[in-house]
Image (cartoon, rainbow, N blue to C red; front, side):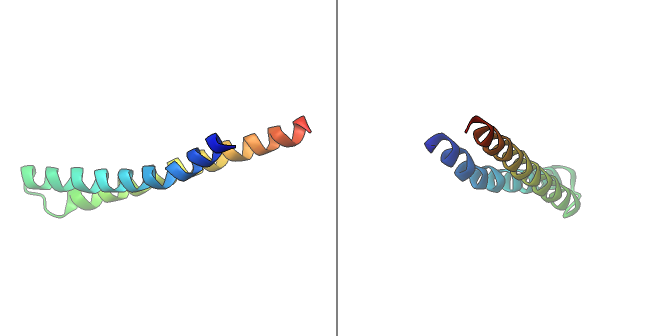
Length: 73
């Protein structure tokens, strides 16, 4: 039970890190290439996409585990 709880709890952290890294990476590239603000926004969108995928994967995995638990009963 604790393993499942930890995995679901960690998805919030994973989402925050994905968005932050995407944005900061884009801002860094903006500074290097002089494309302000376009790559920062692109990085932000990629980070939001990665965060959404992480949430989707976690929800799908938890659903599978719940179905497996129901079958075991």
